[in-house]
Length: 379
Image (cartoon, rainbow, N blue to C red):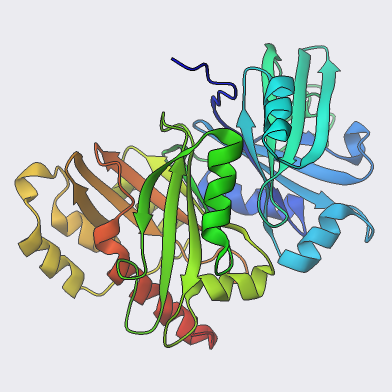
């Protein structure tokens, strides 16, 4: 058996470049229930940016904002709006992962760098992924701190016990049941899907899990094509979308128009109880794309509901979609874009054995997306 020269342990964190990190932190705490756990910024000696680290379950997000017009973060945010900069992968050896990636043709963004504090050391290296997105390789096997060196843990009480206010404070979020990142979806330009799939196959040894052509993912007006790459273990799954020819502008083209380049379209977040998670998100003000009520009448006839634990009435009430494959079923729902530009959004997903991506829901979902596009004048 051939040794895996680039083993990946999972997603370490997702870093967003945003216009205002403190406000982004507040949004994801109040809307999605994430708890801020660490911070780096002027108060900790970091002069060029402010970063808030947030966590729920095994999901770690970093909201970073630049502190001046010449900042790389500010330039990124000007070009793309708020978006994902770094899909960071945890590895057992960052130096080896970086070296192997470069030997296979990757472009280095940051050579292996050792970061240390009183909790130990972390080794980080970075390579270019797609558009302006990067992958960090993070080896924290010798580190016990809350996140990374340079980040200070956040207190969740407003004082230090003596009555003195501390600036390193943020209220806890209310956990709504999000547990881990199921997959991260990339949008790329026409003709870019095969190139990007080849990149992950060549650089990281990924294989193709699924392929959907424009016949499978189409409506009357638009279409797209998609390939799903994965690590073979299920820890990392990366669907890649490109637009296809259609009568009108596809959702991928709209994304590319506003983001300006290839980038992360959406992140799928796993929950063990999608009905309760979606109820909590709605109560927190999160808006979701809607499919027509006729969808549920069709699913009532189409599926064997003796094999599905959730009653169809509960799913219909929250507008949650359902799909099956030979190994089980999944439940899913998609938010509207969470910023002014119609770019990044989220999928909430609950799997019961199924390894697919909701193929049976594609038509209903994309018609819902097209209705939103039409409201924005971008269909």
